[in-house]
Amino acid sequence: QVQLVESGGGLVQPGGSLRLSCAASGSISSINPMGWYRQAPGKQRELVARVTSGGSTGYADSVKGRFTISRDPAKNTVYLQMSSLKPEDTAVYYCNVLVRSALRTADYWGKGTLVTVPS
Image 1 (cartoon, rainbow, N blue to C red):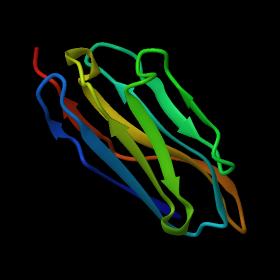
Image 2: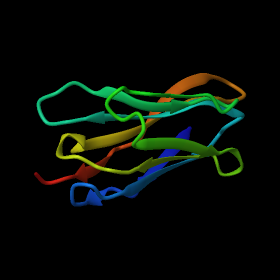
Image 3: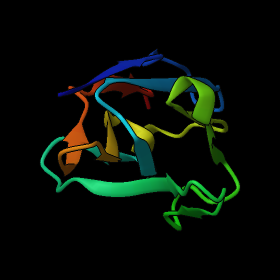
Image 4: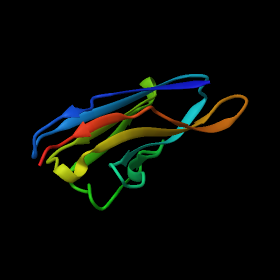
């Protein structure tokens, strides 16, 4: 079993910054990819950013140039540095990882962390 612990959400004024963290622990051989999704009230969950074990990254058009995803393989942790935050970035942010262990490959989700940017 794998556990994901997210942190870093909160209330931030427009133009501000936040850094989200997601640490994975448990039965892990490898993790690839690691990513962040978000779900705003009344909307579907959407991919925000993803990073592979090779360091390749991808971003939603709405966050390009403002958000940066990174990972620390030694800590099985993925980060999302968010800058120039806008009210439309308000959402619950979820960590998502694909984990390979000795017995299985499975997709895991964090419980979510709320980011609020008031208008």
